[in-house]
Image 1 (cartoon, rainbow, N blue to C red):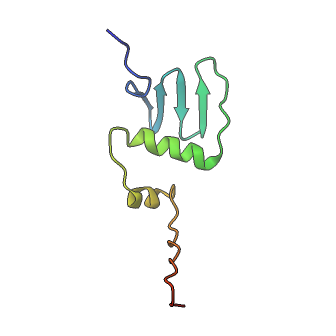
Image 2 (image 1 turned 120 degrees about the vertical axis):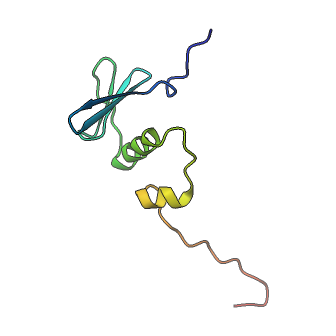
Length: 89
């Protein structure tokens, strides 16, 4: 039997109000804003990438639409460019 993909098996550790996620050889601590490898080495992520990883882990198994991602600040609303129609200004 093949092992589960790394993100299928996410463990959640609660210590008071602190939550830490463990998956695929990593430990994610949203409160400390750290992603650590199993050997304790810190994985360097930009704040936006870190927030994206946290959001995806916290909503694993869910389909996230653009509106949900905008609420979390992961996707910024950009007005689509207006297409130019010949003869119109």
